[in-house]
Amino acid sequence: MAQLLKKSVKLALVQLASTADKAHNLSHARTKVLEATSAGAKIVVLPECFNSPYGTKYFPQYAETLLPSPPTEKQSPTFHALSKLAKEANAYIVGGSIPELEEKTDKLYNTSLTFAPSGELLATHRKVHLFDIDIPGKIKFRESDVLSPGNKLTLIDLPEYGTIAVAICYDIRFPELATIAARKGAFLLLYPGAFNLTTGALHWELQARARAMDNQVYVGLCSPARDMQAEYNAWGHSMAVGPNAEVLQELDEKEGVVVQELQAGRIEEVRKGIPVYEQRRFDVYPDVSEGKIKFEG
Ligand SMILES: NC(=O)CC(=O)C(=O)O
Image 1 (cartoon, protein in one colour):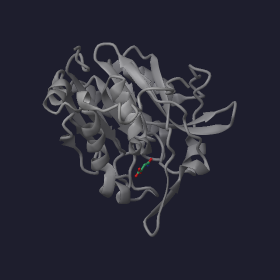
Image 2 (cartoon, helix red, strand yellow):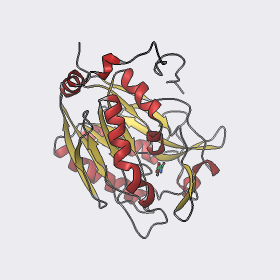
Image 3 (cartoon, helix red, strand yellow):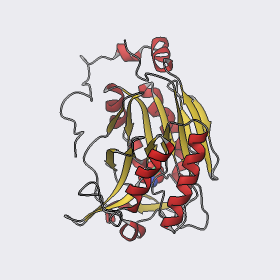
Image 4 (cartoon, protein in one colour):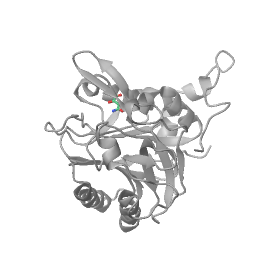
């Protein structure tokens, strides 16, 4: 059987310290991405809301318009900055996420853009599951007060390496997405995400390792660096997890870059050792990757 990851590749998770200044954030992202690609990374991931503060009141203020595609420089400076950077860095860039305004409907989304080394936009993922939680005395957050949810799963073919899946933060809590992506052949699940001091301590590593373990694939989580002056304090701890659910590398809460080699053949080795892939009982329960699944917007 063909290997899911066709050849070994270095993945970079760029944990950025972002500010309220979008232009600064974009140029800082460029510096850190080039640092990662100088270390050999060919797939580079940025954090959720990497060019703005994270919070419902900021989404309208920082939103960019992506449709019709390609947008003008004025409609989306981030689209153009990332496209140019992918070309300059000669790498795939999974551009974390940005607030998006769809002008036609006046709806806002939390959206991730992935670019090829040619600078071409390969895929757009709008966060499917909105982050609405209320843990008394700890944290209340309601993305749905201002955002609308995306309506599709996002699988992206990187011709030299194989298929990756991109989803955003709270999406990781819904294992169906990960399972469908893995059964459709993804070797890597990527989640730009900004957990916080409450949920990060509880679930960040657990979610990453669980998605890797359930599916025997690589998982990458990329957070903003923690800023205790900001209203929302991100957890940090960007991490790369292997197909045996082992944490391969993890940052602390400060700015930093993980560069991790993903090994061709490792997924198959893990699946051979613990062959749950062949032991599933779809005669007893349904296969969630079968049936009606939306991949197109
Ligand atoms: N910020 C998120 O979308 C999700 C999160 O913080 C959590 O699931 O916890």
